Amino acid sequence: MTIVGLVRDFDADRGWGVLDAPETPGGCWVHFSAIAAPGYRTLAPGQRVWFHAEAPGQDGFAYRATKVWSDGPAEPPDREPDRDAPGAYTSYVTITYDDPPTGPGAAG
Image (tube, rainbow, N blue to C red; front, side, top):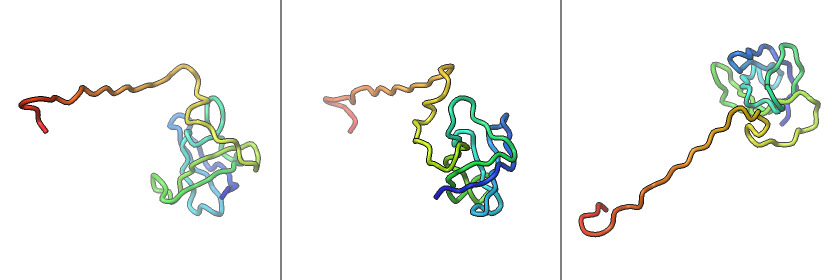
């Protein structure tokens, strides 16, 4: 379900804030990673937003936003996580396992 609400507060330095809507009494915690927007993701107090939320919430709030956008009631296209992040950082992990020992005396 899409909820329409207002940004109560957003701390860009910490990357999180609170959204208010009748469907999320007490407020809805939001992290910058849930904002569906290109580039630097932040929200402004008083800004009207559309969002999806889930319970249980986080940090004392009963609800946590899973997706937030501010460009109208139409559902924005899903995006790959961090696909719109600038090329200044990228992270990869490769895990390689040795072949297990075989033959006499091998654990197993």
